Length: 194
Image 1: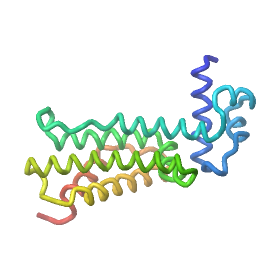
Image 2 (image 1 turned 180 degrees about the vertical axis):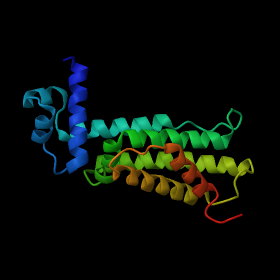
Image 3 (image 1 turned 120 degrees about the vertical axis):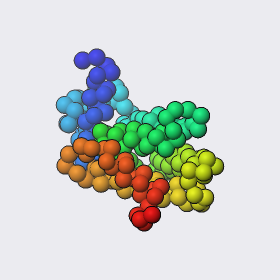
Image 4 (image 1 turned 135 degrees about the horizontal axis):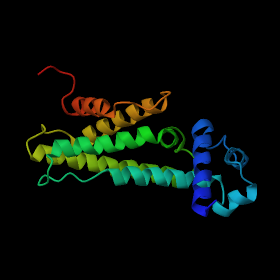
């Protein structure tokens, strides 16, 4: 087996075990058994279960960050479609990578100070992107004036809660676009009949 394939196999096994048992209840022995490898093989690729956990978390955070594109008012499609595309990419990723989503939302905080800072920094980055999109929408007179930081937190909270519901379903969501449309409608229009 090629080194990269073996490393990816170990990562996938660890991802499944962490998503099932959490960080603290998972041991290196659990990962080794699930991956069907020797202890020495594990340590060729990772120093500890924390190292492998960080690798998984970093991969997801990088994937989500990469999926978000800055909204450009001068580009096509229009800003609202660009926003929808961003949310669509994130929702698709989280739905596809449900074990990692569960790890992020359920088990990633409280491990140590470095992990908590990493997660906090990630969410702050996402909040700033949402806030800047809201400010841009207000400047373009597409959105009503609002407290952009507060509304950004509401939107992120909604997305996190929807993602949390994804991980509790037996199967991945079939029609992500319906979910994304509802998130956008709720975030931008609310529930009132106009």
